[in-house]
Image 1: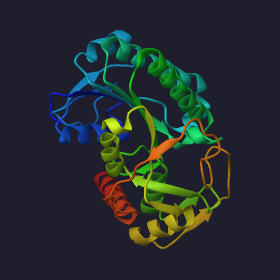
Image 2 (image 1 turned 90 degrees about the vertical axis):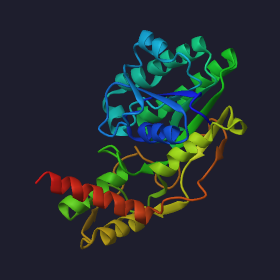
Image 3 (image 1 turned 30 degrees about the vertical axis):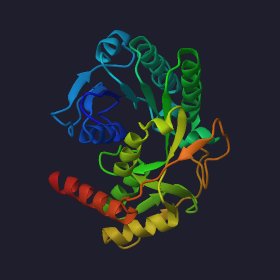
Length: 296
């Protein structure tokens, strides 16, 4: 597609949002990022609008000529959502409603919402319930205003630019920086890991009309239990295995599957070519080692 198609990426300075914005730019879209801050990895060729989703006037002026809107802005850390339920619902629900109102006023072609596999689960605290609620709200807007949409239900994402609370990043940082991993879990947890680069490609692929008005499961080919993952991290890092497994500590995260609550069936798409998790862990080890060296 050409740069005649304009895309607004709300929350495009964050982890998944920034990689998706980069992928859109690579494919020739005219990309505009809307976020509360500029990221250190911001592409200077991409327009950045500093703004807040709670400011509807700023949103309204930012969406002129936009064909597609990606919405990544949310409180996505489960621990943070538990501590701040009101802030979670303010941003994840009312911020979303502000964006949807503007999309309707400006008649955008499609609204793409960053959801989560936790919508199927009983785990995930206020983060999960805010995402379940958000999907229902979007479906109601779609019905009432003929808004085209997609839900991107992301699984276990990892890779560069990940947040400090990202699971795999935390494990690698502990091993590289401390030579030891304290793991809160049973060691039996199962996840379908997907590298953020692979997830971002799929996040752009869904603009194809064949995916319109559907939920998309964005998870990886590689299904690992946490014990195997821990072994890989130590081996790839070149650190002697030193791990303390504390046992299952809470109900915040599912153990083997999120599929307990099913708001809507989803289509699962996976990349034909993908980044192997071993390579992904190696990249994280190198990134964290570089950060460690730079602090000296």
